[in-house]
Image 1 (cartoon, rainbow, N blue to C red):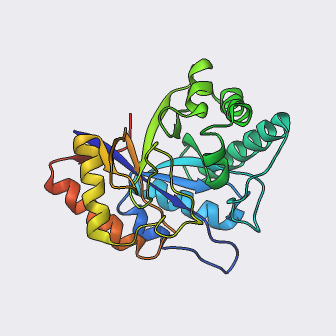
Image 2 (image 1 turned 90 degrees about the horizontal axis):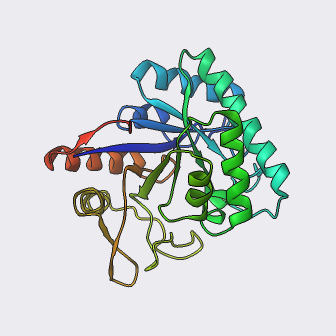
Image 3 (image 1 turned 90 degrees about the vertical axis):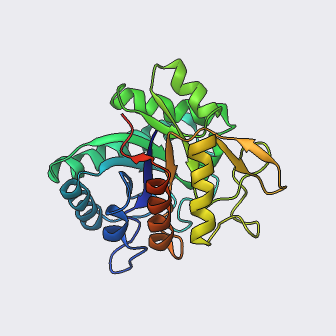
Length: 251
């Protein structure tokens, strides 16, 4: 049994740092690197790409709405053509930085409000899928299984990689609990590790109402900006090792 571990990295800006990118890169196998629209500046993103390349960690483009002030967590009612162009731009920018670091962009993952919107919004989902296809039809995309985004990606022949979230609470229908709700982000490292063990081992997770729901986890996200992120990621790696699960980038 194998699973990929990914984390959102490169989300600082200028002298402001968010999370411990270097420590997380020792624990994950895929790095969702910001592309400058919700976070990240060129020098910092190049630094993260170089650090990932040195460790053999796969680099992914974490595309988002153009929303630095809101960290990409605010919905934007954007025209499809504009959204497609924004995503193409972001992938291209990170590809240049990854190339300069001696690596390449290996997949695309939407961030924040864009990620949540394209679970159900078919228009925006199609716009994001069209952008990825226009840049490189061979690039896989990470997202929620059964989402509108995956439907649009499948229609274009893009490879989809189903993702689960280690430290986020789930609604009974499989959606993520809004960050505006209490308890939406988990912080108990051992509880997070136990949830990942269940996600990977049995394909299930406990929802906020106490029910057990099915979940597909080819890749598991560990948020690098959460308090105690490194501690939680360390606990997850230890639990997966104990379970006999091989942690490696998805193929």
